[in-house]
Amino acid sequence: QVQLVESGGGSVQAGGALRLSCTAFGYTGRWSCMGWFRQAPGKEREGVASISDNRRTWYADSVQGRFTISQDNAKNTLYLQMNGLRPEDTAMYYCAARSGLCPETEIKEGNFAYWGQGTQVTVSS
Image: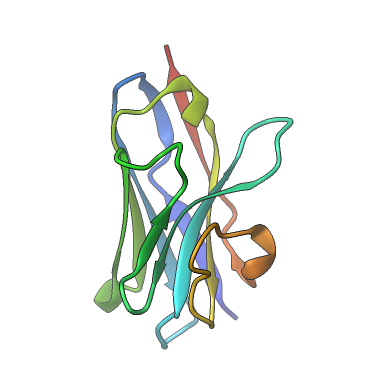
């Protein structure tokens, strides 16, 4: 059974940084596409960043230039480096995976079949 397990969330002040990790268990292959989503209270889940097997990346406009998505295939782990955090970045962050390549533009919840349980990020002003 495939499991995605996120870690690295926490509470930071505005301007701070966090690195989220997502490790895949129960899967020995390589995902064609992995992504990060976030969901703030009362809001819909939104795509934050994605990375394809061919290393193509996509970022939401709101995080472009501040967040970096990467992966270590040897460790079966996906990362999200978040710098310059803002209060509006506060949300539960989820990693997700799919077998097909990532969409060329915005990633959506329905694009992904596998999900982690989430890790909370709280940014105070």
